[in-house]
Image 1 (cartoon, rainbow, N blue to C red):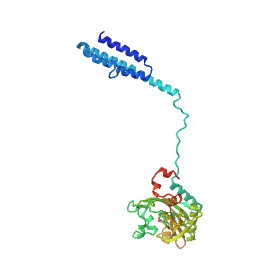
Image 2 (cartoon, rainbow, N blue to C red):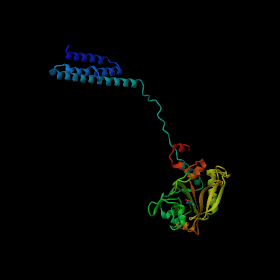
Image 3 (cartoon, helix red, strand yellow):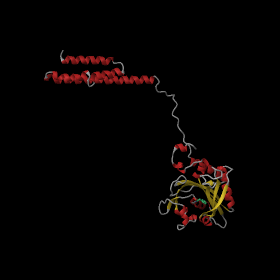
Image 4 (cartoon, protein in one colour):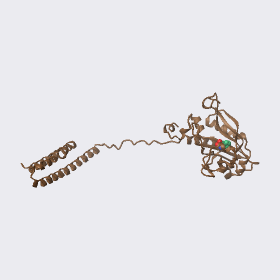
Length: 342
Ligand code: PHE
């Protein structure tokens, strides 16, 4: 038999075997056997050398034509088989549209926001409205108009992030006092000013360079220190519980006169002394005082006829005390294991 006839026989046998391959495995085995590196058709190229030179090109071309023909049929059959398999899977219900969807996990309010809202609620009951003032503040509002001129050493109490020569990130919410007074004077007012404050400070377990404060301000015709202390007592008993004791110490702030600081008995040890209260039995909760006459005047009120009180409460610190959070850095650490607890 000539080499040409042999080649045609291989082709016929391969076509028949291809026709008989019923599964994908059989089809793949056929491909390897026929067109693979050592497949029957591929091996035919080795016979070329046995032919007289003039017949070689024709033989080579015939091999190529057969290869292409077989490959084309093989590809079509492989695709058809894959298609049939998928159709069978679909018909067999592999996609179960009745499966419940993936649950959406709803978020919740940050501990700071929850605490702020508790505070709004408590002060709203005492007639305070929420008044917002800007985070980027003018130097005059943050300092000068609060009776802290540039040369005064009291400025050292607030390490400051400056934006430019005249603007800064407010170091406390007190500048809002001036804004609220200038807007409302000469009417009586009772507001709380919540917001973020910024200080150029070392970050530690107890202090962050950003934190919230809530300022309180009441201006009226007969406001006294008794009103201030009564308001803060009411606040501590509503926020920390009626059993909490309060204590008032004298203090100094340039914008209040007289100035006080208010403590509560330590929540952890009940006043016996522990590391949290540094063995004093007391925890400081706010600075406060009667609005300084100069500040009243800067706000547009006549200090001879008007008086007022102001206080500045932290927000994270009270939350730390109430929920026993040991490190203030958790508030801005974005660790869900912390946040999910509240
Ligand atoms: N602004 C003061 C501070 O940040 C707190 C304060 C507010 C004191 C109002 C007295 C009156 O430290």
